Length: 105
Image 1 (cartoon, rainbow, N blue to C red):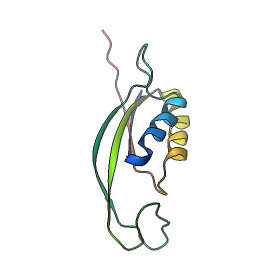
Image 2 (image 1 turned 120 degrees about the horizontal axis):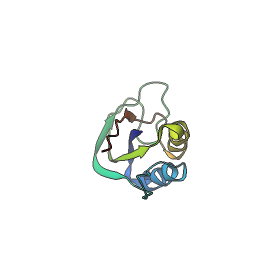
Image 3 (image 1 turned 45 degrees about the vertical axis):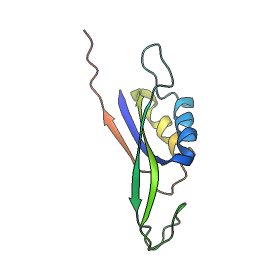
């Protein structure tokens, strides 16, 4: 099991969540579409050669973003990341993938 964390502008958060869920992410026991979100400010400066979706090359940018956290089974993690990247508007997608230990009694 993994936890996928992705940072996405608010305008695309729903579409990215839906893409992840369609690929099978966000399942916990008998529940589907499981996720957690929090909001914050993402900062970046596109450098020469970048083709930014938001902002301009050589200008520091701040964007209100949503941090989406979703559980992903190890057998589908590649499919889920591919779907997430396809739905995400950024040229470079900022995400983390954490392996989880599942403890059961």
